[in-house]
Image (cartoon, rainbow, N blue to C red; front, side):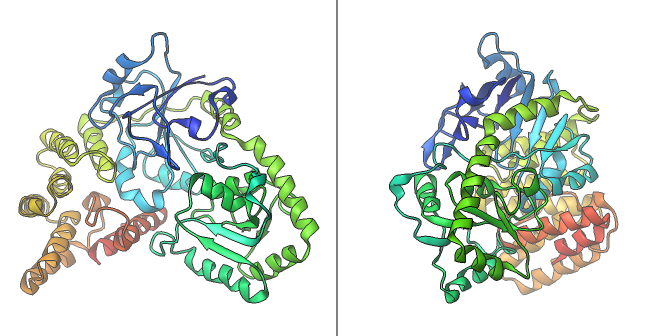
Amino acid sequence: MRLLCNLPLECFDAREAMHGVELCTFGPPDRMLVDGVHFPFDVAFDPSTGSWDELAALLPRGFVPDALLLYWPDQEPLPAGLEHCPVPVVGVVSDYNLSLPYLVGLWPFFDVLLCDRSGQDLFRRLSFADVRYWCQFAHKRAFHRLLPESGPRDVDVGFAGNLNPVVQRARAPWLERLRGLGARGARVEVASGVHGEGYGRFLNRCRIGWNRSIRGEMNLRAFEVPACGALLLMERDNLEVADFFVAGEECVLHGDDDFEAVTTELLADRARCERIAAAGHRRVQQHRLGRRLGELAELLARRGPGRPPSSEADRVLGRAIAMLPTWAEGATIAAAALAAHDLAPDDPRTLNLLGMATLRWRGAEGGDAAWRLWHRALAMDPYYLPAATNLASLAHATGDAGLCSQVRREVDRRAATRAWSHLDGPTLPLGYGELAIDRSLALQSAVRAGTPDLFAQALAR
């Protein structure tokens, strides 16, 4: 299988290990720094400004892909004109709990969308035509391996990862329980900001590597811990772990009620702990990305319905909204938003997007223009809520109590809407602060429940 991909997959595994797969990657030359190491692309190409036709013209002579594999469209911009791509376009999404409002408009682009098990029903409800489960993660073999020079395993239970309580709100209470093991005599170390070789050395010092997923998925740490020879300890209700490791033999699972007891028993039985860790290390070698790509080829061999019918206005709008949280330059995003507005000048969603793009491009200097654009969106549709929500954010920033009260009334009036179409559009703040994550999670809950009220309430807060 020939794969054209926007991620340098050799950051996970060597190309010679990708049996049956010929890989060609594309992206900006200086873009991809993974754990402090630069991984070059085969084809220098900026997807935020370029089109599919331009990318196709740059491919190595004789390379005709069987599929276009696009990782993380909430981080990596999509090329324009994907409707002209003659081969299946396959999307890979991960942190949709943080970025769902930016992803919902991407339904026109993918023949197949790959996600974790928890996301399958969610994205089907969001009109994505063909959603399939595929575990996208593996350990990075350059960093995650046995390192005898790291010395003895002097940490009983270790965890290294994102400690931001806003982003990792479900994990934060567990970190306190993890630290609490110290009162039971365990040597516990919790770290953040550890990457690459340093992260590999840290895991090589751990007897047990604790992990907890966000969406019940097999995340990176689930493979990194056993690859470094530590015992993988993670939640029993994980939706995917049984596909990869045998509980009690190659990993250990715990629940809310027995975490301390399970961990204490493991630490008291060093031989058992070492036996399970060694078995997990052997098993994880079978889950390297080189092998996983072979499974992907088999998965994609089953053809589905293909890309759903869509209008040019749908595609241009969806691509531009998804670019908002990416590395694309502000001027580029503003141009994409303007193109969406030109195609649908009477749609309040394009005016709302233009306001967001203006702030993304010009910062505070774009406030007056964004304010006018959002007022025009309100006048265009008496029920459209995102533009009112954005006006409330700007009003709050001014500190003008009268203005805040005026906009608040408009938000409250529109919050009674019962139609999804009146809630469709990005809102401030950009990024992954607490309010933005609250709204992303509320949208997820609303879609799963089929109740737009839940999301309308979140936009009105």
